[in-house]
Image (spheres, rainbow, N blue to C red):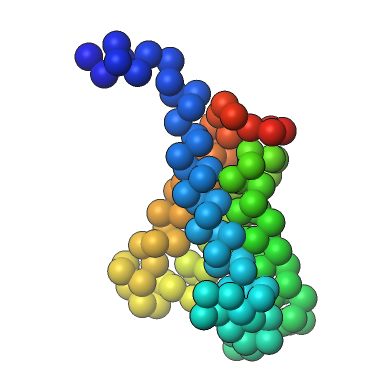
Length: 133
């Protein structure tokens, strides 16, 4: 019955993932890069990266912040969706393993959902309404 209602709408499905995941990463990237939304900014985030043993910490902080912020913008606009999802997915794997895993399931379930969404976008692409796949 649902197939009759929605027909071939599956090519529109990735839009909801692109918009929600993109918005989340724009916000998280802005926290890391600019200190927006109560974030620590680059200096604070670089300090966290240093505590994780990632050196040079500032370079890693800039890289992660740019991947999240620019990748989020690209997802929202539908530009290089698969590449953006891949790079953000890698950041999520590192975040899960390096930061959230020790807190147990309820410490890493949100990054895990974001990773799953990135894998879905990596496999399906951006769907319709993309600027450049």
